[in-house]
Image (tube, rainbow over all chains, first blue to last red; front, side, top):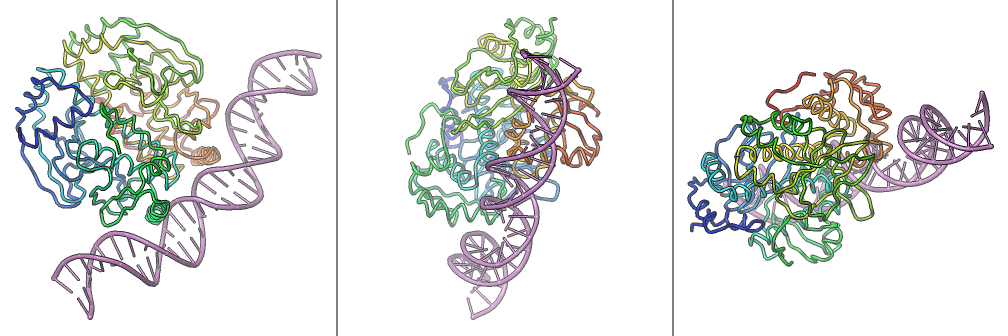
Length: 243
Length: 243
DNA sequence: CGAGTGATTGACTGGTGTCAAACCCTGTGG
DNA sequence: CCACAGGGTTTGACACCAGTCAATCACTCG
């Protein structure tokens, strides 16, 4: 099996059971690959795509474009994620998708996916579950950005990120390459650039984590989860990774 | 057709096309009805429900329970909504569901729904679409609570609410009974109670809306959408209502 | 070595949270 | 009929956190 299909199968297996027939169905998907530099738009707000994007390497983000040009980042996606699965059933994109750092994506025609869902409902249910976990992550983001003070908010954000990275096997749970810039972090967490810096140095001094030069390093996981009040149950993983 | 089935069919038709066979399938669902007073929990965080909740009348809310007892409200659901459709495919509830004011709900066994999806994929796709719109609403909430100042945030919140109410036919677009209390509004929008009051009186003075005694009144829709930067396209309705 | 990009720090301000008091309305009971 | 209690709302005073803006620093690349 090539690594594109493998990425998708592994991701779905994080939360769903797949039979060998299900896997065979997934293996039959055709796709085309594309490489991206930093901050390239993959899909724009208002588009009506007929391809589904699968992250193969690197990071991809979703964002709202606001009046005035400001962006609000909504989520970040790692290897195996389908950042625009919603495009399967909703005509117009209500947000955009872009690369964060160098990234590689594969595009799968919607038609093939829909046909697969009709033939093997279980494949559909797995991807449905994927989109539901997506929604759970959004809910957590609402809470994070609305109810937690800056430093806890920052801590929680990185807890989720490294936890998901560890679950998909692209991180050992200690370090992660994550080439987001600080102004983008500000547009993710709903805080000013100065506050991003202040909370990052808070977390450095508290010996929770260190984030600099696009490299995240966990110093003390216990402490970090405590600061960020991080409880991973909302990620609905069948086998939660140990960090 | 009784009004419970009708509520679900109408809701799904807001965004999806259903054949008469699809509708017949939905009509076959059995259910049980329950009446609720204000602020009763319907499902708790951590539950593993085997019934899906359908709002028949009144309002239902979802919320996160935080350490310390504070709540973060995530969304509000009106007639026809399935506030815990995610329970269909995710084992443990990562949030709770409760009533807001008097409400009536119907519960449909998961098994019946899953069987329906297998027999008629199109019914599954319609409910999948429903959950995707749910996710779109969450995304908008992230942006609203993270990127908009208090008054705009409040305006946007009520714009969405009355717009959705109008779409499902339970409001004329001018007034709506909505028995949320101000402290709950604060826990929804991520602001202090004092700020809730300040922005409500801002909107009153700006002649955008009036909200008092659990009754929402739109004074000037144009003005309100402008203040809240409200663009309803994220709700993905086939026939957007005119207000 | 200089330019450029991004990170960091500092001074300042204003908005938002906290807290407490006052208010309003409704329902109840003397 | 009025007094009172209670829940919910509204207002005010005040402190402080977080936003804005500008200057400085660090690093990379030409």
